[in-house]
Length: 338
Image (cartoon, rainbow, N blue to C red):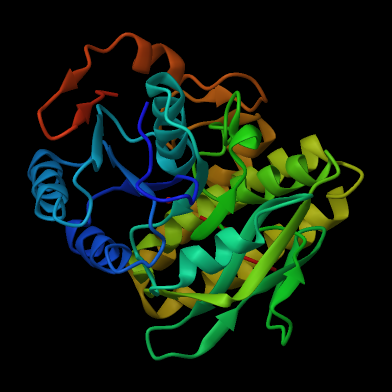
């Protein structure tokens, strides 16, 4: 078992990559400047096309001067934000690696003190820690979230530690014991899974907080991603209503779907996105009504709360450990707020 060269406990940073090695390189560059002294980085290549997969592997190799033991897991297909992070969490358990977990999107850049400040807040009855997010222009976007049914209000606080109703999935810490036996429900694939996780953690009596002195910079998403965002936001909204009908009402669901429809109308100036957006919304409603989870367009899994399907894939693979500590395993967040 590894021992950190410091009295600080290990922090496992999980980064799920899909089709954007430039963003991954920027993310790792900034992570390499972190002042937290005991980082273990796990990069999951989440079923990208072969040339992008190769670029991601090269990018990881180029950052070994920051992280000599960085791990690179290759999945044979795209398991989404939920499945990709689950694969990394399961890998940690399989290898016997200790330490809490940081979920970090590859389009996020941390500041040198970000992870140290967040780790300072992860103690006692705190199970989840998020942080303050800035735009690329330096504007404060949010640092905590108020949740009222399907409505997510992204807010700013003047306090260093602020209670949050749920965490935002771009960058957050979770206590290691809360990631077992699994982290995210993979039937979500993308969107709403961190809200589901937050509610499950808070149901145990633990708190979710924001360490507002910790900052990240978030890149702006491409408009081309909007149709998929609309699909998963609509479909997974049904899952939330099925799980927590006391909190997510049918009336609230209808209002939220209408909100997604209004967002789709705004795509009218871009005809291809407009048509794709309406199809995504219709498909999302259909699959949500049929309780069909997993990746869009594939024979989905029924939405449920059981052990992830990645168990079977991970345990059936031949593990290939190189001299650099690479592990190859064959086999991203938030929701559009109302």
